[in-house]
Image (cartoon, rainbow, N blue to C red):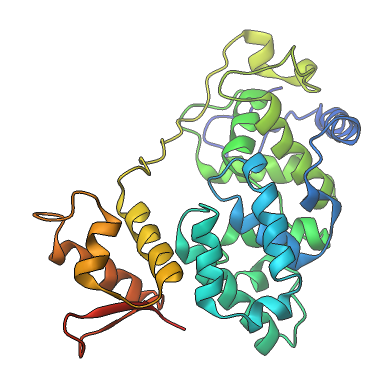
Amino acid sequence: MSSAPEGSDAPAQALGEVAEIQEALTAWYASDHREFPWRQTTDPYEILVSEVMSQQTQLERVIAPWRAFLDEWPTLEALAAAERAEVVGFWTAHALGYNNRARYLHEAARQVRDEYDGVFPERPAELQELMGVGPYTANAVASFAFNAGDAVVDTNVRRVLYRVAGLESDCEERRYQRLASTLMPENSSRVWNNAIMELGGLVCQRTPRCEEEGCPLRDQCTAYRTGDFGAPEIQGQPSFEGSRRQMRGRVVRILGESGDVPLPALGPRVRVDYGGEHGEQWLRGLLDDLAADGLVAVDTDCSPPVARLRR
């Protein structure tokens, strides 16, 4: 495939293979893709839960907590009526990462209930009005629930576009988006975005699996033709072990299990090496952060002060 002329804002000018790419990729996806349960529904609530859970998490690890979450709160109305501490406690117990996501998901459910009469908005721009829903998540929900999204460009899609079109290493983000939009068939965001993300996640990995997985775009792919399988630089995730994020999660889990906990008893349960630079001042910093997020309250009228989840 030929890439766009240097400096051009337009996607490829010589995309003679667009129709072939569309046909090959959608046929491949129809016959050979992973069967995640959220791909079997068009319920925007269920899809939003899956999208929030899968942020920076392997999809296979999301299946069990996604099902458990929907068992606990099967509808948007059920989640909106839940206590926030219960939702955060679930998030922590299932090691789903940043607890803010649980708080935002809970608040988004209440927004849809209270501000939209329980009916999800359908377009990406409207969905971004919901708490914690950024451009990518809004577009995913619009695509997979309503078939009304734009072309998705995430890390996996960017890698596919880079290799297939033979883009420059310093290619601007707007060129990725324009190329993605050019390739997506009209009114097909549900199937197309699933298909191209599946290609990037399963086949066009950092180390590509073109032959092993039978990549459907080999005939059109610049990287396959030239053997140059570079990819846009991907920044690594900061370590979770020992991170402030991990310690915040421990605080929430402990308070969820034990109720009110005096600070001198809480500290050693959060860190086995509690003390010194990771002593009371450090613990109060964690609690201040969680309090600012609306998750934790500290009762300073008690002696010693007591921390509890905010209900």
